[in-house]
Image 1 (cartoon, one colour):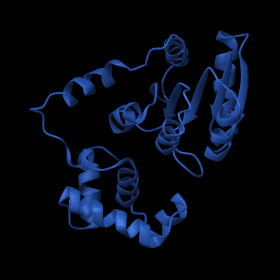
Image 2 (tube, one colour):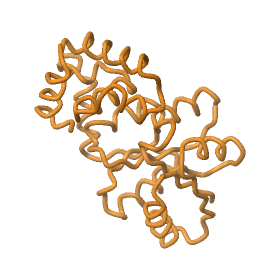
Image 3 (tube, helix red, strand yellow):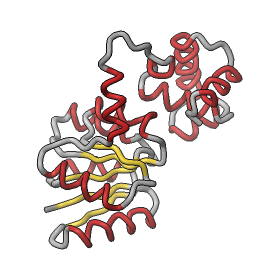
Image 4 (cartoon, helix red, strand yellow):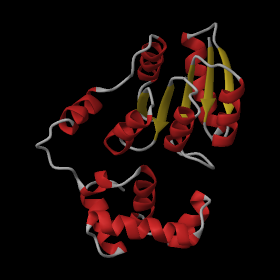
Length: 208
């Protein structure tokens, strides 16, 4: 069994490696510290499962999942993130991910997720299962932020934290005009008019 751990923080990789080693003593473990390394490794090697941080330098995990799907690279990917499940879990599953856990989850949850994914299943928590039921209910109202694409949602959250267009462009390795375009789309889709309204909305819905 070969497992790839991808995270830009060495201490996080070390912690995950320890959990895996204790439960899967025969596993061969590789590490990647950014999205470029992750993609390079899954293109050249076959892994049983990939455990990746949601946000790393370069592409985020949602974009990586879409790249893997486009290139028809079939490898189960479990996403770990500091963001609550209600913000990204459904997006991860829609993008082709096999599971989503917050970094505050107990080690046993990660082990459970790995075992489920290795058996060909997807891992979802009770909270995510409830979200899925709500999502498939045609009569349920869609929150404004759920109308945004994955990249728009990322920009939306950064705007909500007070980041300027230039700062966001630097963080996401994109141009200022591109971020400005995303902001325009966000305002159009949500009906919000200013950055201040984006911030108020995000705070009200506990997105920041």
